[in-house]
Structures are given as C-alpha cells and as structure tokens.
Length: 115
Image (cartoon, rainbow, N blue to C red; front, side):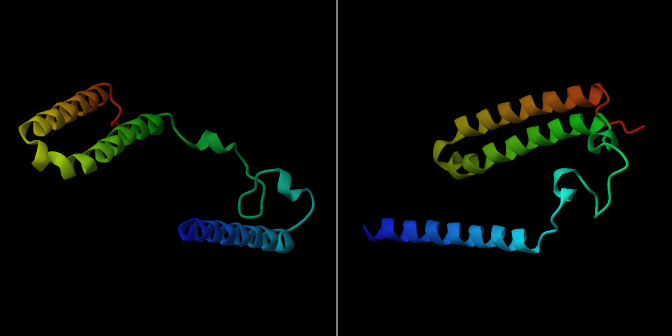
C-alpha cells in the first residue's frame, strides 16, 4: 500500500508543479490579441511556416526513421543474441538487408542528391 501512496504523492506533486508553471506563465504572459496567431521573435512571420521546407527533406526524414527503427530493434537484439545464437544473427542480417534494399532504392531514385 505504501508504493501506491508514493506513486500518488509523485503524481500529486507533478500536477502541482504543472499547475504552478501554467499559473506563472499566465501571470507573466502578454495579454491581448497577440496569443491567437503565430509570431516569430515578437514579430509577424513574412511567409507560411511550411513554405521554407523543400520536399526532399521528407524523403530524408523517412530514411532517417527507417534507421531509427533499426536502432530500436537492435538494442533488444543485442541483449539476447548470445542466448539465442546463430538464428538471431541470421534474422538481424535479414533485417539489415531489407533496410539496405530501401537505402539502395532511395539512392537510385535520387533521394540523397541535393542539386
């Protein structure tokens, strides 16, 4: 029962802290019509936020996410590879081969070309 009390105390102090942060922000913030629109360092932006990013960044983001997922799968694999043995190594190389096929495809399509 004491562990539940500790968790409830932690959640209560977290709620109190968040409420205090929001209260300070409300008191210290600037009032008026400024809060409804976007602004950039106190001034109105001159262009739409999405207009600055070229479409090639989205392809690079997808390749990054593919390698990010690779890391998510490799950490637990590294913990169990010694106990499972050859089967785990073969499965990881199959997974890496599949990712490599994706990278070769992106490279062939020109996803990494910047000019």
